[in-house]
Image (cartoon, rainbow over all chains, first blue to last red):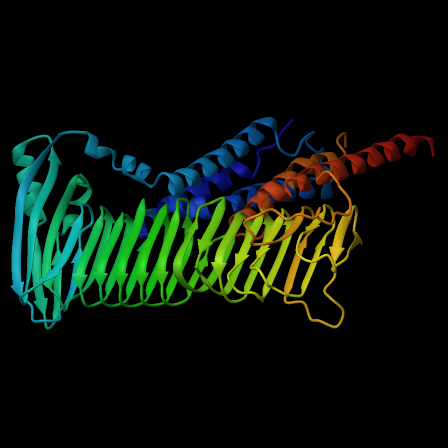
Length: 463
Length: 63
């Protein structure tokens, strides 16, 4: 026999609290909160049950045969699947979010032209608020801020659309050297389907700040800084003179070309494409697509849940996706710490430090005596040094073999469980340290022809 | 008392562990893909304790 459990009332209270928060603070996204903290629901659920059982036991009441019924397990598994699925959708398919605005599927769309302008001076700060719809900002001659575009209203009839449109007029306001461009879509209330596509012309000296919820944002050809905040947007910046700060909950692409200042990107998205950035680049968050960086003149710092990457300068190119990191012509200090990723660095200078749980590493330094430190839990390391290098190398694998084609004078000894170790020459501090717990290490020289003598091998262990 | 405490407690303990592992995964401490065997270990330990408890109960009347 099962007594009434605490879980029922607990769930009621929780649902009540959640809905109350939703009503009082609509700016907090419940879905986001849930997706962030859902594991604690499981913990709370289990803990409550545990308390119940302990209380029953303390009172010497009969205990249920299983603390958590099959039905509850099914619910819990559904919860996990839902959370994992929604999280996947949130990071991998940012566009899925538009499905939440289901209203847009109904009715017809009615378009209204939109225009406004204001005298602004040579270097105004332009603030743009457009909840839904695209925003394009372009700098140019003159001292005016000029807005063109169209508003699209979804409604069942023209009169209804007219009413909704009248509620959210375009405002272009000047306050000192601040210019505010607002489409006021929030005034349409829950009727939802209002969006505005804007083209804004600003003086070249302007700095721009754009806030939106859904819609692509382009900014080009201005001398000031750019600040962008959106729930979901593809962002493209080109020829921006100042600093750029981009905060997104979702995006299919962030592309920045020719930035004069520093760049900060935060949030979630897919692809990031950077080219010719003069200032420091900081990227924080989760990005599931391809990251490509060319010509970064200042340090790059990338930080995600499972990857930490720092590079001093990227004169060449660095490409990274969820499985690989390849780079050519970069300058250290290079630091990478990641759970799982194959790494290939070519023609790099400066110290390199790599720590991976899993993944293969291939390094082709440009310098004859590079400083390199690699430690892997599992994966192969190959190091291809330029001709004439006399670097002191220390290498070890607990399980695997070392293939040394560099110098016959270096001796490889047994190590670990069927592994091998190569010690640095006596009396020399090693400048290259390679260590893998499980995997092979190959040391080679950059010669086009394959080496004549048979490589020095110790033991062949299948890994 | 027909069900031993260890048996009754098994479900909730596993549920709490599952939640903790997922939380660790979410906040980047350790991937669930790596930590999931903890669930098997805890299940095994609880089963073991259950055996011990049942044996003690069988032996108890004789003593």
